[in-house]
Every structure is written in C-alpha cells, then in structure tokens.
Length: 141
Image (cartoon, rainbow, N blue to C red; front, side, top):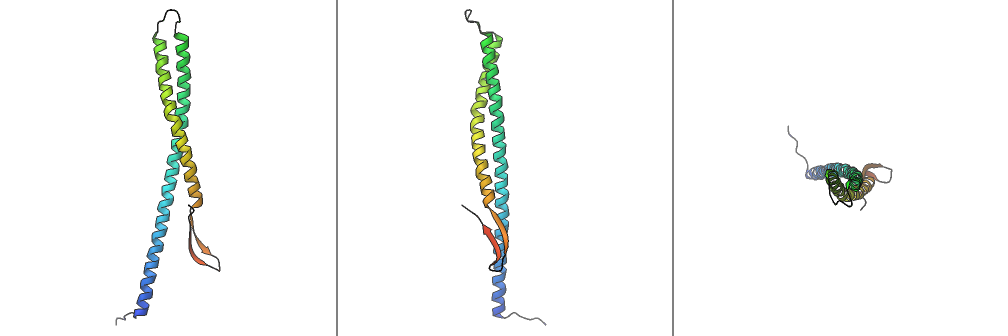
C-alpha cells in the first residue's frame, strides 16, 4: 500500500532538500576557489623564479659583453673586430633579459604575496561549540 506524505511533512522535506543543495554547492564552490588560488600562487611563484633567472642571466651577459667590447676595441685604429661584434650581441641580449626579468620578478612577487594572504584568510570548517552548530565560512576581504 502506498502512503502519501502530508503537506506539512512535504514542505519540511522540500526545505531540507534545498538547504542540502545550497550547502553542497557552497562547499563545492569553496573547493574550486581554493584550487584556483593555489594554482595562481604556483603561477606567481614560477613568474618570480623566471624573473630572477632572467635578471641574473641578463646581468652576466651584459657584463661579459661589455668587457669583451672593451678588450677588443682598438681606440686609435677605429676598427671593430669579431670579438667586438660578439660583445655587442651579448650586451644586447643581456639588456633585453634584464628588461624582461625585472618586471616579471616584481609582478610575480607582488602576486605571490597577494595569493598567500588570500589563502591564509580563506577557511571553511564545522563549528562544534554548544552555542552555535553548523557549517561556518570565513572569508576576509
């Protein structure tokens, strides 16, 4: 024999169903946000590391290129030999690397700080105190 639910029980069941859907959606959203911020943090760390690497290589290339140009340039003859040309190429490559590495390092460090701070302020937990029970969500702007 099939039993039907009373309207009062049906309303309670419907409300309970929607509350559970909302709570599941908020937990899923929190997990996606957390993964997004972790991904952005990793990207920022890679940017900063790449910027440091480019800056260091650019500095070394510039110094080697300037030194090579200085050693190979003949002041009175006014001639530029192959060593001078390779020094120009090393210096230009070094300056371009410096020009790209410094902003990359600065932006990566700034974003890394921002996403670390965001991850530290973002948390979800179950509040088990006697005064208030339930799911708590803490997010600071």
